[in-house]
Amino acid sequence: MGFLKSVKDISANLEPADKIKPFMKNIGNGKDSKIMTIVLQTENLQQPITIKRIGKIDYSEPPSEDTREIWKNKYMFRPKGGNQSWFFSPVFLLGKVKKKELKTKFEDKFSEKIKKTIFNDLEKEEVIGQNNANKVKALLNGEQNQIINQIDEESSTFVVFAFQYGGKEYYAGDLDLFRAYFQKKMQLDMTKTKTERTCSICGKKVKEVTNLNKVFNFATFDKKGFIPGNQKPLTEKVFPICYTCYSKNDHAREIIEENYNNKYTIPGINIWIVPEINGNEHKKQSVNNNFSNYLNNHSDLIEKRMFKRMTRQNAALNFHILFLEKEPGKAKETILQMVEDVSPSYLNRLQQLWQENTRLWTSTKTDNPPLDTAVKFLYRTFSTEIKHMDPSYRKQKAIELLAKLFRKERINIQHLKRQFVSKFPATMRDTYYYHKIRNQLRMIEFINAQQREVEKSET
Ligand SMILES: [Zn+2]
Image (cartoon, rainbow, N blue to C red; front, side, top):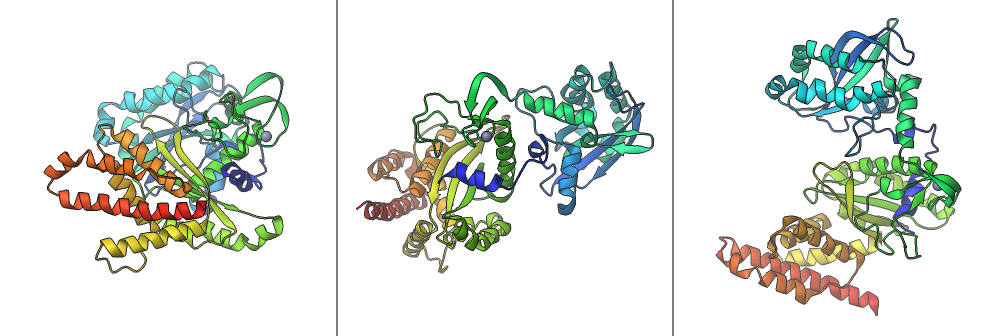
């Protein structure tokens, strides 16, 4: 059992159609994204392509749900890593910009930046002809007004380059030379080994591996026993995986991000809730309906009732809860905490405890406050009420506390009390001191009750 087993289940039916498709990501997921398509007219479509002029510039909504897969394969978008000076395909994330700002810094923010991050490398790899990167920059400068006028300041803009030849339009994904370019870049993640290595996921013996942290960036990757299903102590950080498992896991990660990701409960933290069906194949079949109901009910994730929803799941389901943080300027999220195998029945018990706590401490008439409010309350109280200067430290400690709670671990309540008390002098000077201290007491009471459950389950 474990998180990686779940990922394996999710990716089981994702037999890679080709070597690069699983690595492509959707663009414009959110409602607030737009796509600017700049069509470049070319003299040929053979390598190296010679670019002539800009054909047209369109500004549109992202592809609709039913055409997303088709467009994903055409755009071939994959976000670049932090230090890369190239993109996997000619898609540039401009983001949200003000027209005024773009006008004064057009080269810095647009033409020169696009040349540097996309076309320079395409030229170096001879996908486009010599001096064509400069040409694209000059062409973009020439269309500055049209480009700026089309931009919607409220939306995050992706700039997609398409190619026109012989009266037809082609996207990168339609052209073999761009597909080969993408694959070449993916291959950079693989390391050739002298002797055969065993893939940690499928067990296949291979001579080319990458590391699992290319897909899941565990903050505590090097800690013994952190990686699920790996009982042997890790002597090194390396968790080798083969190319096929890399592509399947990367694809599964996108499915998790799109379907099981809660961004609403704790600000700045993504909480992944990954379900796992226990039991044999037959049993799996019988809970499949329940599982797909969960899959399809995204509204619960969004409407802040995710944890409440989980308490109602069949006992044949378990959950893995991951807390992720995306550091500004870094491409990948870091997994701060991972809690495996959380049962719906335990979540249900937590929900009951929270209900009792709410009845005692508030005048709320709600019969059934969602467990989500408990998560929010504990996080907020702990991360703001302990005496420590560094907010990121307090954040991490608060997440750690939540993880302990879900993991049914012992929590040192005396220590928790001392942390609150040490901040009393400052709290007392606060206008809302009564509220604050009351919240602290309420939190201690809740954790006390939860710890009695932990003791019960230990005896
Ligand atoms: Zn493998």
